[in-house]
Length: 213
Ligand SMILES: Nc1nc2c(c(=O)[nH]1)N[C@H]1C(S)=C(S)[C@@H](COP(=O)(O)O)O[C@H]1N2
Ligand SMILES: [Mo]
View (cartoon, rainbow, N blue to C red):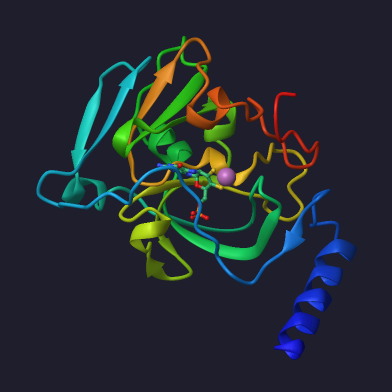
């Protein structure tokens, strides 16, 4: 118990020295669960993933089809607005950048924002440029295992900090929707669930953009 407390402190000191601990954050080795509402069931026979809005052709993928899309792995640090940070987390799934580059999604020039739509109507919004960054992924796996139900199985958005990538934006972890069912590309920005509840619209972890007030 005290050994693990000391190990946590030492790990936190290390990431602080490396410049990877954002202001107001603390390192955790746990993986807290945070969301509003119940954990939905998953039925692979009826699940689908929709892409619509400012795209040349809306698409719908079944679970089987989604699993045929090109896959990517990314290691990043995730930062929750409730002040815990988890380092060197490994995610596997589908990169929106790859889907666009390889023509699975054809954007209209008017597309500027992306709304993630999840089960029970949960949404969160990001600028298109952020969704196309390497630190945003449609993830099916965490640390080599399928997501657990409470962390978003079968699919969630994830966003985090890739060490050294000061050139790309890092929003807080709430901007990854668990139980993700679709992406809506829009011309205008539209605040999502937590953004309407008072969270910051951009939520940059390095600028501590936690709330609007
Ligand atoms: N569908 C859905 N996704 C969600 C949320 C939610 O309420 N519903 N909460 C967000 C918030 S506030 C956080 S901090 C992260 C937490 O993810 P975790 O439970 O895997 O740690 O999920 C985000 N994604
Ligand atoms: Mo959160």
